[in-house]
Length: 356
Image (cartoon, rainbow, N blue to C red; front, top):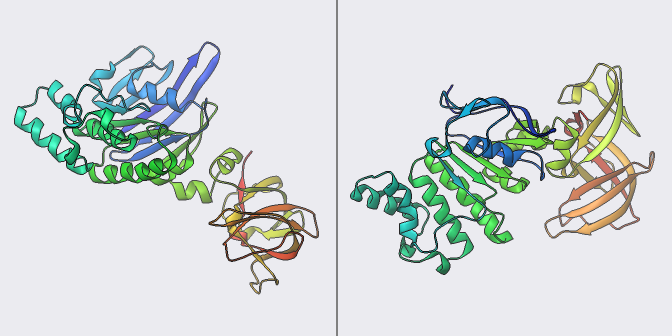
C-alpha cells in the first residue's frame, strides 16, 4: 500500500503504554498532524516513524516497504525521510546556502545539480538574498525557513515535523503556519506534523489525528473535527464547547428546558437512554426578541457574564426555565448588558451527540 501505514502500532515503556494499537494510513502527498496534549503519545509515534524508537507491537510501512516491527527496523538514515526539530538544528558554522546544500553533497550529487537545486529552494523560501549569511545573523523565522529548505531540497519520501514552531513568538508562528502550508501545497511531500497547538494543526493539515493517553480518538479533516467531534475529549480539545445532558424519548431528545427532534440531529444517536451533546458557542445567537425561525430552539434568559475579546464578545447566558448556562460567542457589534434579558437561538442541526 502506498503512503505511510501504521498497523496496530504500539510502544510500551515498562508497564506504561505510551502508544497503543494505533492504526493510521497517510496517503501519498497528504499532510497529517498528530495533535494532543503533552504525554498523549504523539512524539513517541513520530520517533517510531523516524526510526529512533522501535515499536513493541505492530508495524510501520512506507510505500509498501516494511520499516519497523518488534523483531527489527530499518535504521533512520536509510528510510529516505527528513525531519525538522523544535531547535531547527542548523549548523552555525555554515552559511545559509551551505546548510541547505549539505544533504545534497552527502548524496554525492554533481556540483552543478547541487548548485541548481540549492538556488531553486532558496527562491521558494524567499531566502536567496541571504544565501551567504550565517545563522547567527538570521531571525527565528528565517532560521526556520532554512530548516524547511534543507529538509525539502533532498526530496524525501516523508517529511517529519516535531513541533517546529514552538520556539517562535506568536506573530512568527502564525506567519510560519501559512509558510509550511504553502510549501506543502507546492511540493506535495507526504508529511507528519506533531503539535499540541490546535490552530497550527487546523491551518496546515489535510487531516488531523487527535490522540489522548496513547490512543487515537478521531482522525478527520479540520472542518469535520470541529463541527462533528465524536468524543467529549475531541469536542473540548478542539476549540470551546457547551456540553449538555439529554435523554432520548421516542422521536425527541429531551434536554433540560427544551427538546430537539431526532430528524434534526446530524449524527448517530442510541435508540434510547442518556446521552451528551456538544454545542459550539458560535453556533448560537443572542437576540433581544424571540426569533421568527420556526425550526430554531428559542430560550429566554439572562446574561450573567461578558468579556470583550476584540474580535468577539464572550457571553454566558442562563436559561430562565432551567438555570442551565451556555457559553455564547457574538460579533463585536452585538452588545448585551450583564443582568439584562435576552433570547438564545439554537440551530438544532448544530446539536452534536458525542460519546464520553
